[in-house]
Amino acid sequence: MKRCALVTGGSRGIGAAIAVKLAARGCDVALSYRTQRTAAEEVAAAIQRLGCRAFILQADLADLDQGRDLIHEAAEGLGGLHILVNNAGYVQRIPWEELSLEDWERMLRVGLTSAFILSRYAVPYMREAKFGRIVNISSLRALTGSAHGVHYAAAKAGLLGLTKSLALAVAPLGITVNAVCPGFVATEINLEALATRGDEIRSQIPLGRVASPEEIASVIAFLCSEEAGYVTGETVSANGGLRMG
Ligand SMILES: NC(=O)c1ccc[n+]([C@@H]2O[C@H](COP(=O)([O-])OP(=O)(O)OC[C@H]3O[C@@H](n4cnc5c(N)ncnc54)[C@H](OP(=O)(O)O)[C@@H]3O)[C@@H](O)[C@H]2O)c1
Image (cartoon, rainbow, N blue to C red; front, side):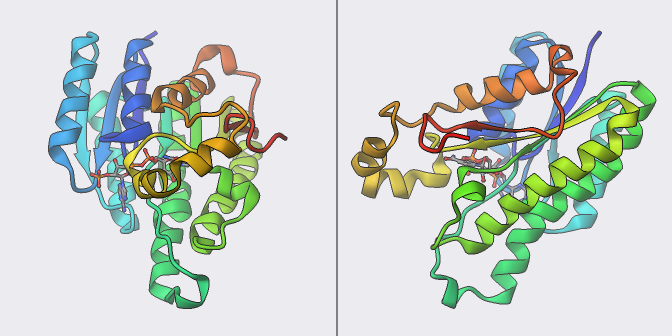
């Protein structure tokens, strides 16, 4: 059966790889971007080349009303919603003493509260479809902490609590909710870290390299599949052995 998916932050990086991977597995995909429409259009073209429908939506997930509208627009545009991947995010490297309340609140809204809001509005569509998969993209930093991104690590750790709690709440509906914690992935979000500390970072990773976005997308695509129907409330790490569970 044709599935309909929404991938937030699907215009670039890991989100773009997820959107294309889901299309390769037969899903129609709505992808959201915040600023880079051209990048989103390139991803949409790749999805269409795979014979699936692509639907581009703009939203700044720091604005929770836009998050709510995003779900309704995606479901109306695609004719339903079976899969939600809460992927959009950003990093801000800053000493914790210099972090303003505004920085903190924005990070929590984009990285954590939006996942709650989007899930809340997505679940009724999934219930109606009698199929639902929610995957929250957390981070290795949720598990290790981050001295230069305490708000990022707090938001990502919060996502793990949300994942387990929501998994319990929607299990009676047959909807699964899981989280993925990537380690270092070759995307723009950590271009600076890889440019300045790339050798040091790679030397600490047992597999000796950073991940490609496609490797992370494969894990997420599995969690979105029919085959993963008995996996829920889990946190799946994909970090090259940097931190084992
Ligand atoms: N790359 C890594 O090493 C790594 C490791 C662990 C976890 N992660 C997590 O994986 C997810 C994807 O990261 P990535 O590396 O693919 O990042 P990326 O290449 O920087 O892409 C980020 C995506 O999120 C969107 N976005 C950013 N802020 C947004 C906002 N306020 N509202 C709506 N959309 C917003 C961007 O849209 P525009 O381009 O249009 O602005 C873009 O599509 C993030 O949640 C990140 O924390 C990444």
